[in-house]
Length: 125
Image 1 (cartoon, rainbow, N blue to C red):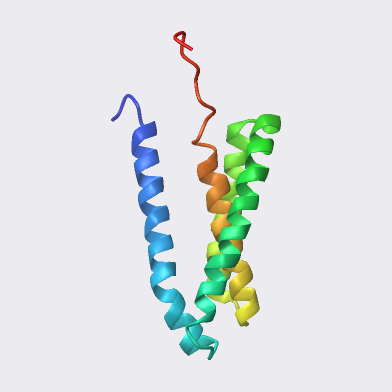
Image 2: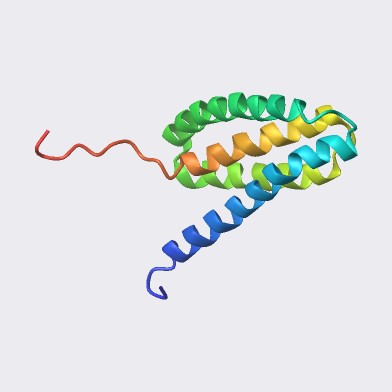
């Protein structure tokens, strides 16, 4: 691992990201009920909005990677993801909570989209 630290960074990043998303998904119904005094039904709307934002982010990230390459796009996506994660904890209203979750999920898709490269065509094709 000392010679190639990239796998360790990848594993650490995936583990911390998955932990944050797991806590967010587990806490979302409780947060919506107790903090914002809504029924748990709007949690589905939150994940639907996040899914739409994620699809849009994947589309944008592919084009951004083609134009500016992987590293700057990944750095911006990681910064946006971190800011959105902090914003979720500070949201005063339900609608800002929905927006923050959608931005977090979209930024995460943009961040992990950089790991997905175009298919490599082998010589057999």
